[in-house]
Length: 415
Image (cartoon, rainbow, N blue to C red; front, side, top):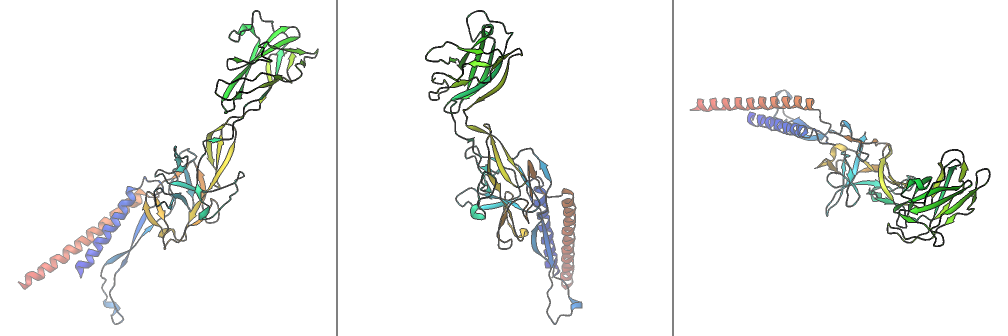
């Protein structure tokens, strides 16, 4: 029996060393959770056996228990890198024909350029709850989960039809000599540019040139790109007149320019220029007000994830859109989860079904953006355990060798 007793000890030590080796191999794996091998002694007895005469029959592995203590947190600066401080797992939908929801602590996510879904390194899609514009969850439970997708644009384009521009023209400005030429700054006094948009939302530059014509008279010319705007088919400038206090008296209404066909490819459009608020004073030229009514299509410029898990996208046109709320999962017995590799787990009969919720809810940890949870393996601790397992292996090997020598001696005595 001593052969089998020592053999069980050898197998136990080898199993423990395999577990420790696996832990050490994944010391740099984000979201990895170490395991601990548990053993129990083997005793063969019955009710008639004298307990004082019992001799054990070795050891047996009772389980490989996963340790879900929190790993070290690493700051990355990427808003889509997420870490859970406390209990909980991210829910991700795996790829393939048999796509299923898996659970992970590895929160390294990025945007798939082809689908715009937020995915991990395996291409599995992060699951969130849908929300309204105010960030209120509109569906819950496993059926309410959806892929987190970042739209590349926001809003609808609108062509500019009106520009409001208020400027101050200096009373002491000199009267330029020569014919107006937009390429010659000496033929006008001041110029200012305004960004306007065509019907497709593409930006164009509208430039307004101001020229001092006489003591109480100025003129304005407008260009979109290199195309001069006309009034009634004429390219003559519009005259600006002021009262004795320097307030604009003419034109009293916005200048209605003729329609143009933008060089950017948009549809024909007419742009009006409202100079209300323009003054003529002793102070230097300045723009006191500027606005236009066109809008561009907003390009995605950033994404943030707050402490509650609300994912918000911001766009170049100023739009902000709440895209979803990161769903977290927890289990009655996390140690019973089935390991799938790639830092994934799936539920089992031992772990129980996933209990879904959100960050900071009761039973769920907090969420940190710009951070990744590393492995929870302590190298020093594992090396000490490895030395102990090696000693156990050597001791059992020595016991097996001793049993072999005793058996050999007995065989020699018979001969």
